[in-house]
Amino acid sequence: MIRIISAFILAMVSSLSCATGLELRLADGAPQRHVVVPGDTLWGISSKFLKDPWLWPEIWRMNREEIRNPHLIFPGDVILLDRDSRGKPLLRLQSARLVPQIHVEAMEQGIPAIPPNVIRPFLSHPLIVEADSLDSAARIVATPNDRVYIGNSDLAYVANADPAKLDWQIYRDGKPLTDPDSGEILGYEAFYLGTARQVEAGDPATFEVMTVKQEIGRGDRLLPAIRPPLVAYVPHRPDFLVDGRVISVYGGVEAAGRGSIVSINRGTRDGIEIGHVLALERNRTVTQRDEQDNKVVVPIPPERVGLLFVFRPFERISYGLIVQSDGTVDVNDFARTP
Image 1 (tube, rainbow, N blue to C red):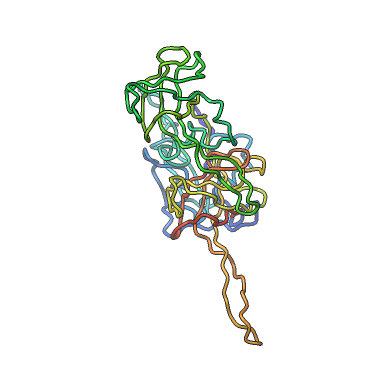
Image 2 (spheres, rainbow, N blue to C red):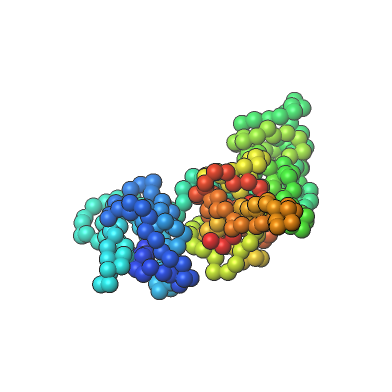
């Protein structure tokens, strides 16, 4: 099959400036070639060649209608750093699959944009719920022998369960997520506890607990399980101004680093979409004395503390993976267009 891949970069660095006017800079020690191996990600490969890896899709704009799926890069493909007729750098893809050969192999998936194992649980769990939205959900009303907590393979008796749904996820009301600017509650982060399967319909219905992430007991709520959406995660910068804030670090801690999941107070209604890369910044000030010896606070340019890859936006809140960090990322740090 001929794969249209002039994408990965018919010229990832074909000029020293992209459509946004930002300079495309080669990474220090950028290799002349890279052989794609299992476990590679688009973000990781981009980081080998560019100082700002989130810029590489922006020069796809000339091919955007043709190139919809970056997952068409496969292990064995070779990415070459080359020069155009003007001596400016560009990247070329040599596809290992264009060589004629006869063999049988299992269907192989292209490389992902970011490590899928990190974000997979967050794709299938609702995470953000509206106020009181769990009040009408199915609820554990009893446990065998009146046990306080139950675990794997234990039974639970559930009221208000749809008999047509077999696979369910178990939640507990979580903490409110508040906008640091307005003080408004944007939603609630439901606390994921595990999974269960309905084995006998009724009211209450009988469920078997399949997996346990946290203690499960009476009063906990159940929602029908959903399948993770099949989405191509293409890293790209927003083409509009974003000025949001980090409102929580998943797991209940205050500081985060590379590989952490955080939420921000911007969502789909603000134009945020899957694949947006945002700069995580911290506003800085210096206190000094003026000519009258009075203390004055002088704002100075913000400090970049990391980069955020948005992988699941809700209406007013989005979850992202910190793909780069310099030090810690804190609640109330800013999420802005890079």
